[in-house]
Amino acid sequence: MVLAATAYLLPLANWTLGFVHWVQSFGAIGALIYSVAYVTGTVLFFPGAVLTAGAGFLFGPFWGTVIASPASVFGATIAFLLGRSFARGWIEKRISRYPRFGAIDRGVEKQGFKLVLLMRLHPLFIPFGILNYSLGLTRVRLRDYVLASWIGMLPATILYAYLGSAARNLTLLLHGKAPGAGPWQPVLFWGGLVATVIIVFLITRITRQAFERQLDAEPEKAHPIRTQCEPDNGSAGRGFLAGAMKLSIIIPVLNERECLPTTLSALQGQPCIHEVIVVDGGSTDGTRDWLRHQSSVHVIDSASGRGNQMNAGAEAATGDTLLFLHADCFLPHDAAERLQGALSVGGVVGGCFRVRFAEAHPRSLRVVVAGINMRTILFRSATGDQAIFVRHSIFESVGSFQNWPLFEDIDLVRRIKRAGKFVALRSPVTLSARRYIRHGVWRTTFLMFFLRLGFWAGVPVVKLKRWFVDVRPHLKTSPRH
Image (cartoon, rainbow, N blue to C red; front, side, top):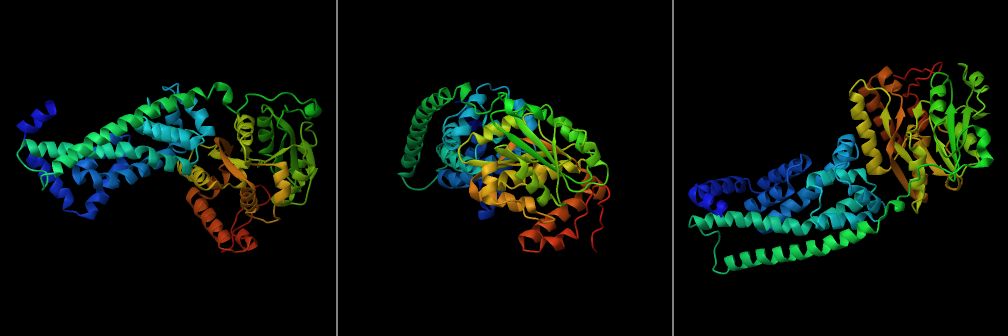
């Protein structure tokens, strides 16, 4: 009643007509402009109902739905990806206000498409904008998220587009202006609106019941991640905790005396480690001498080259899971728990971690990290500094590392993905930014991009290596100009 009175007392009809005519004067460009505004508003937490109603107000129920539906999915997908990268920490704090999200997280891990679909069909206790970002914290696949979101949001999109169009028609009718031609058009319009409200109401009611049953079926014990491993007496002599998952960590080194002690020290607190194998490729900086006094690691010698060294370590390993760790990288504190959780899912044969830099400056490193993590999420690809892990049996079946000076890690990941699911764990591995700091963040970033582009184009890796500068002591080479 208040809205109707306001519409009657104020010259809203003239304003409405003027605004609608202004937008429609752009033709197809007007729809594109509104789509961009819709996507931007979704990312900025603007209520989706208002944005969709606005589309209906401007373009009518049919075209409003056609415009709003893809725009809402695209905006929600951008928010989803941001929740997995840039905005992760902030979203984790916000979502802690909703205790039931833990049950959703556990359920999504098993039935991602179904739960996302139910959440989209049922107006949840979590606001639309927060939900888009929050689902980025779960393990739901991007493909399932996009498809389930599009299907699940469609009924509400149609309803709000109808309501937006109804608001315009009501405003015009109160001022004696017919919204359209034909005596049956108002009957069809308002009848369609009533039918849409009833259908959406029934869908919401049924969905709420199904959603509650689904969450009730996901008790705490259903979470696959274990907090610790049971002791394994057979490997207690290594000096590290071991467990049901026998994890063999393989670290190739060449002149890493400065970084290696910190890396090994960080591993001491990790559960589930069956053995740590350090493979030296002929260090001349005192690395090998220092390793002789480390009783907690298994040290072997190999021909230089990361491929050769990691193959030698894998051959000596006795664990059922192999993890290849660079000497300047540190595993997250919950690495073993994340590994066990991932490998307990059917079909998963290997994976990697996301990354973060140990150094906070320069700030441009944050952009690099975001780009790496985004690439990992979208393409399930990884490089060696992301702590690639794989089941031992799969490593043997797909073949060992190539003896290449570059990109032997990318080649192995490509073969692992053919054997089964390759996952990206949410906890980040911490790596050194020494290369970026020494040679410049943007220069190094673009160099790595073009080197990878050359690799995919078929340029021999030996030629690409000429442009790659090694930052380790006594191994510095100048790029060829």
